[in-house]
Image 1: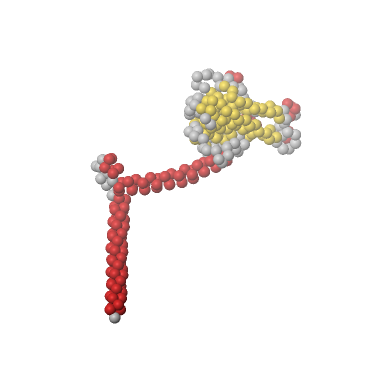
Image 2 (image 1 turned 60 degrees about the horizontal axis):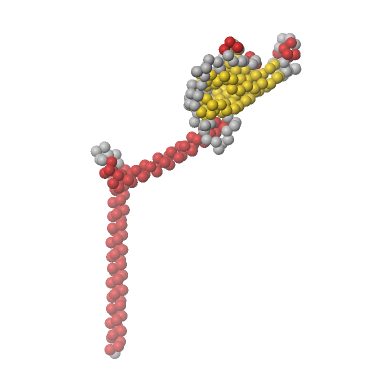
Length: 282
């Protein structure tokens, strides 16, 4: 009998201990949950307060006090991440758009090549009454051919990036190695469009020149030339010919580039066929 009473007492003691432990755990859970909610609310209010009052009183506080303020650190980190995300996205979109445009007008560039910091691509002006405006003087001004002055630098496929176009000349802004290219397109009239057979028999010498003008030298310097002999077409269709050349040259600030051609009167100033340009490569 005494043994059974002892077992009952032991069971009651264990049950009471379990109940007390359960109650203690429940009270502790409720307490810490309340504390956690209070901390979250406090943090949220302080974060919102940081956002609202980030600029209030900033002028009167010292820089050292700002750096030690947790609120200032949070706002600075947030501003940094926002600015970095926006800058990366903007740079990606702008680089893609400009690279696509540049590769469209300059076939030598592939989509993976970054945009040159200094570049220009000017095109012929087919709709202008000044399209075939050229300087007819040859030896008097120190260069061969007839200089083409009517180029478009702003509309259509043309563009100017940190370069200027003045009277048909590209002005170099800074020293460096430049890639220079040019293409001219000629339309030789057929025999049905000419008066006489002598023109047909003589043929035509098509020549394209790329010149550089320096402020320290009175005569333009020939950088490149390209030529071909073309016969005047027989029959009703005109003869279509193009000259293309490209190369590199080291240029100084204020140097000018221009194009001259032979037979300027037969040149077609279509912007997709006649153009020239340059860009800095190093």
